Picture 1 (cartoon, rainbow, N blue to C red):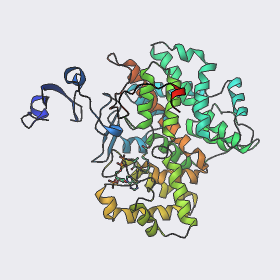
Picture 2: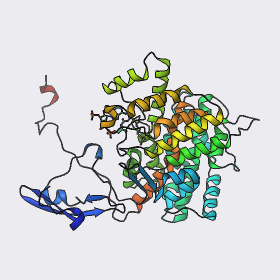
Picture 3: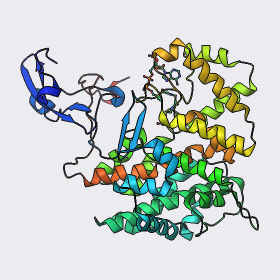
Picture 4: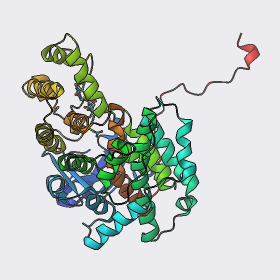
Amino acid sequence: MSDTTQTAETTQTATLNLPNKTLKMDVVVGTENEHAFDITQLRAETGYITLDSGYGNTGACKSDITYIDGEKGILRYRGYSIEDLAEHSSFIEVAWLLIYGELPNVEQAKHLRDLLTEHEALHEGLRHHFEGFPPYGHPMAMLSSMINACSCYHPDLLEMGDSDESFMGAAAKLMSKVRTIAAFSYKKSLGQRIEYPHPELSYCRNFLHMMFSIPHAQYHPEPEVVKALSQFLILHADHEQNCSTSTVRMVGSSGANLFASCAAGVCALWGPAHGGANMAVIEMLKRLRDGDDSAAIVMEKVKKKEFRLMGFGHRVYKNFDPRAKILKKTCDELLAKLGINDPLLDIAKELEQIALEDDYFIERKLYPNVDFYSGIILRAIGLPLNMFTVLFAIGRMPGWIANWRETVNDPKGRISRPRQVYTGPAHRPYVPLEKRG
Ligand code: CMC
């Protein structure tokens, strides 16, 4: 960028000086004063493309949904702070907010609850799909397959019109059915009878019922357990252009339906660098509990890059992750309420303490992320380890739905199709097989 470029703030344009070409670019300014060069004409005008591994500097879209200031540790859904939402709202309210842009009124919240109840059951044919999975199958594999399979039983999803009502029906179907699929896959893994959803229970209670009720013994969770689960889902409900949400948007940009796009989101979420980290944190803490190494020795190994401290670090947060702060408090409160003394919590706190005072972590701005304490909460609720990332997916569903809708409704939307800088061999003449020796 040329030194003579006037700043974006004053002129709202920027100039790129290349050897034989000068390109003027509009500067796009977001509501929170984020600045971006619009490089739409870059290749056409100059022949250059940008190279940005991991997209750390690339704005893939404009979005009205979620705002993060990673330096200040701010996270807002549609302008509302995550702290307020986690403290005062329900997952249903947050889902409506993310998808429609406003907090629902009483009637709208009831409408969404009714739709979730209406769609909570699985088609019996779909239920039989569970028989095809082995009992040890990973619930994330089942979840993504079953979400896709849903569209076979509800062909209306493939022909969803533009109306708000048909979209809302599809969104409610997805949010409701993932909860049922998740619980069924758990029962399947135990070899237990499936518990059908209960129409009179709230979203979180209903999930806990399907997970933990057994014939003739309905599960009645403590209110604090329901609150903690609801908060977990709220805190995971959206996080702007992370790996899984970008995947949903990318798949949706081809015109793929909501269910196919979100099934792809589940697959993207599975990895340990993303949603799979909540499982990986607990596995790491357990190894520490059961092994010979102290927390200090483990941290030395992390610094030697023998492995990563799971639940630490974030692409965007460079000060603290506000979700982790909330969950740490909830974790303390929930364990105290349930009278659980989990040694993993003590180990986690010890690791955090060491990290916060160590130059390696300070210099790289590595802090606990949302996954560091969330697993201890899920353990206290009684959820099995291999369901942790499934819970993340259930929570993220409204965010994926909102982002999918924003993508398909964008009048200037184009299929997502990045370019590359090719580094393979230059053209080579083909040699027929028999002449290759
Ligand atoms: N432990 C030790 N070192 C780390 C860690 C970690 N958890 N995370 C980053 N670093 C180091 C990394 O080695 C690199 O060091 P250097 O500059 O010497 O090469 C530096 O910090 C920057 O790392 P990066 O890989 O360029 O950072 P990134 O922004 O590409 O990756 C991350 C972000 C979240 C993938 C990464 O921090 C990580 O792998 N964390 C552990 C997995 C995890 O907790 N993931 C959940 C993320 S939050 C929930 C979600 O959104 O899914």
